[in-house]
Structure formats: structure tokens, C-alpha cells
Length: 142
Image 1 (cartoon, rainbow, N blue to C red):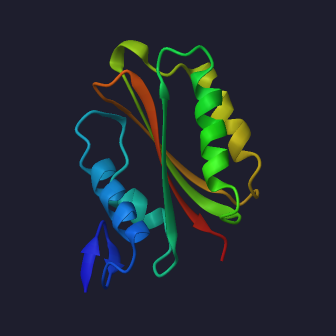
Image 2 (cartoon, one colour):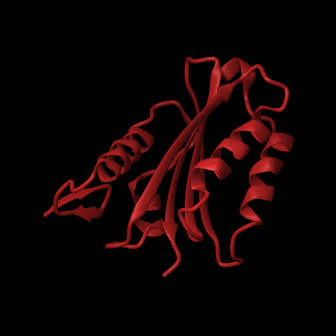
């Protein structure tokens, strides 16, 4: 059995699984991380054998309300997928338009919609584009 980031993968059954694997590799191999997420973080966060959902959203880094827009896009994509208690969020942004601490309040507000037993990992990284990109991996409650 093949292992990707310490998560056993017997075969790629769906496009979703391939997307999850691609994004996990992208996150763990990122050389521009400010707050790094590694294979151990992913292995400790997600339960083996449970489905992991992946979403990606992007907003213009120059927008004034960029984090609120980003969270709204995430909410729209997550809608109907169920309730999650294990979430990984990796935010990528241009170095010259970095994310401010006050902007992370939108992320905190979104997380408060989930159960108290929510496990969250946050990664931050720079990239060369003029966008803020969120990679979000989610796993449902037991």
C-alpha cells in the first residue's frame, strides 16, 4: 500500500482523491512557508480511512475586504458537504500584500460555526501571484 504524507492510499478512486493528494503534496513541499504544515501535521490531524474533502478558492489580494470574500467563497463550496471537525487551511499570499492579524478574524468567525471539538491546522505561505489563495482540507465528524 502506498503512503502519501503518512496517509495510506490503496488506489486513486476519484478525482477528489487525486485533488486531495495533489494539494497535500503542494502544502508539504512548499518552500515559502511562514507557518509550515508538514506530513506529521497532516497525519495527526486526519483520521485514516475517512474521506477528506478539498477545496480551493482565490481572491484578488488588492481587495479591501479580501479575507471576508475568501471566507464567503469557502462557505459556498463547503455548503452541503456536512459538518466537519477536522480542518486544514493553508493561505497563500503575495509577500508585498501579506495577511494582517486582524484579517484572520474572518477565519476565526467561520471556525466558530463548527463544533467545539474542532481541530484546525493553519498554514501561511507566500507566492508570486497577486491573489490570496486558500487550500482547505476537511474531514467530517466520526
